[in-house]
Length: 209
Image (cartoon, rainbow, N blue to C red; front, top):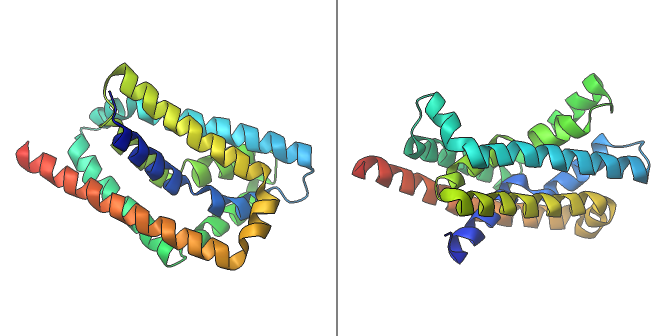
């Protein structure tokens, strides 16, 4: 049975890698020209698609890794480095620039027909960082109850993301440029610490194994 600390750490890790506040202005950018009802439909669909992707890796992450002959400790170390790189980008404001470029490409190629699936659900919400974090966490949430708890955590994080999308205009206006910058850097520092912990746990598991 997962402990309170493990549940809280998993929630924090997934929420930080998804970064709902950072997605708010991008959601407005890729849905420009849409009315409120259309934006609501896009936000619901993108959240559901992202939930499906992350839930799949939460339940079958270890199986997917075994198909490629990758051990969980090795993936934990690699994922930790990836999460640390994302944290580095967040602290030095590189991640937002990359996300905005991804959003711009999507508008020119797909326009707004499948905007919920790409780029919102993939790769902005359930991107490499969120998928890596989910697979890493799945190793700590064993058994049916553990998997159910992890899927529940993902559902809560995506429900919060959906709420941020609904309130995107107000959130963006409330945070402002300074607020977004401060929040992104703070979350980046927390993610960096969690990434280091992932690497340490992975190295320890490989050495003892």
